[in-house]
Length: 293
Image 1 (cartoon, rainbow, N blue to C red):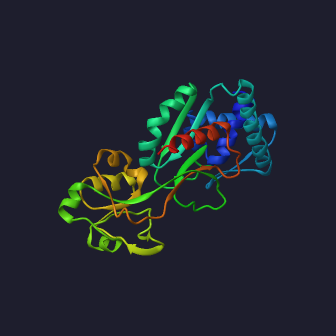
Image 2: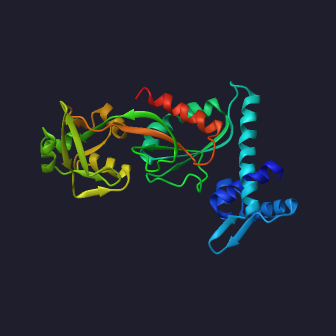
Image 3: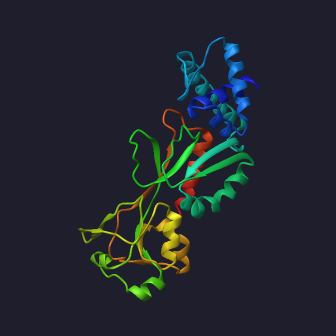
């Protein structure tokens, strides 16, 4: 293994905190990771990691080496892209995290265009509705919606979408249609646990707050969609979440005279690390694609 690969392996071990996690991310066996670190320590004649029951952490020398190695890898990647020219494709691997439903509806369909433009690039997409640790998971960028909990995150807004009340014609046929936000209290609501339970509707400058509740509550957007499409109840969600069904007529928007707070789509980069050219280009690609939605 050359020096660049050894440095990259060490950086991944430090960021994940274990040989096994680094091995999973690099798609190699754990013994290979251990051997690389041992060879690196032998060559440098210094201990780089402290091994304990709590995992791995860098020594003082290891931390200094990690910071320089991470910067060197970043600079090497940027130099390679600059040398290849603006028209050349990206290479290597890109790890992206995104919410499951959003990725299925809006990222996977456009992914072929990005892959075609960059035939030497591999993309790994980690799907999870929850916020994950980008550094520990070795993620290059994350696509997140809503307010960002971490104010120190390195982030950029990519798009802003609307929110609406949705229901199927089947549900409305049996339960009737609400004509004001207050009417929602009389309806069965499918609740997404990662969204607020109290919503503020606006109309002509006046705000009305409504607490939604229902017998079905789900932690995943896929579950929310499935429940609504099964005529269980209405829901409040982003327009992005029901885009195909809005186009086909499988769901309807309700209370359109009232507005709900919009939702933002963000790209978030790992804190403490300069975003790679690959991550920046993919973020711009998503931004351009979402501009027409």
